[in-house]
Length: 284
Image (tube, rainbow, N blue to C red; front, top):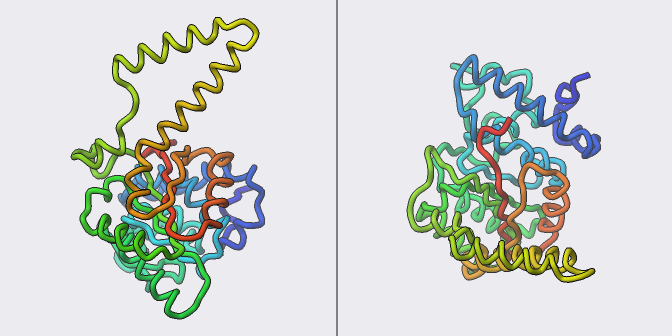
């Protein structure tokens, strides 16, 4: 039996167990590929964000809680989970569904946008409105690493970090925009400890630690864990910490065992938070 056909809104998604989510994600991918094969559209970006979309609608109380997609051509799974499955075949057709989020189309679509770089500022505007109205809902912005080269994105992060209001930004880091990212910020985000000297030193140190009688394997394990903690503290979280955000991650955005508990925890945090999630465009 199809799981997707039982979902008319995120309320139906909440009745599922997380063990059912991988099968649901497979159905979402098949639905998106089928539609895009017929009418065209954005394929790779949507296939890459499916697990995150399921996790967000499972944990948030949408449409009361707000999700802003930057850019919103990655919102196909969002549309399928918010009551538009039967109209999905009309995607990008005259009189049919928009290829982007559209407020006139659904209460679940919070912002009309087709261009990268506008999401953080728009979402923080919703945060400011929430504070003015003394409301309590959550606001989440999903932004791609390609949009980090946008001045408007950096201005929005600067503004949000300075005002210290509850706000979650999720960095969808797939190392791609329309094509491979370039520039200083992209290099900063993608930099890893892969230099020849470092790699050789790590291999030789691991070999020596493993030879310690009785405790070698345990020492190797703790050394690897310390290495990952050091990477997370230095690259790239420092940039966002300096902008006033609490940084969490990076985590695997396709693994629900990592994604769900981490996302649940960061949604409870106070103030501006950035969750760094690694995903792959076009993953099948």
